[in-house]
Length: 68
Image (cartoon, rainbow, N blue to C red; front, side, top):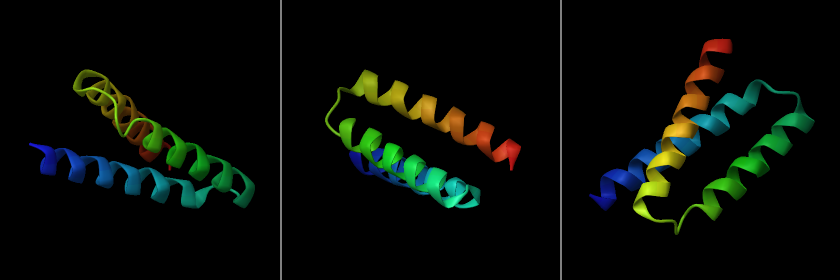
């Protein structure tokens, strides 16, 4: 279900960038660029690696959410 995967990725990407809004400007810029690069690099990976990638980022976003 590619459409479902794409919407999951977009929602996660958006959520991580939203979490960066509370950071100081220089850290926000660094974090935003890192997220953009990571998501771009993983655009063409296989299914298994994509699944691991999403699980790791979802876990990280939950952890950040708990800290804010």
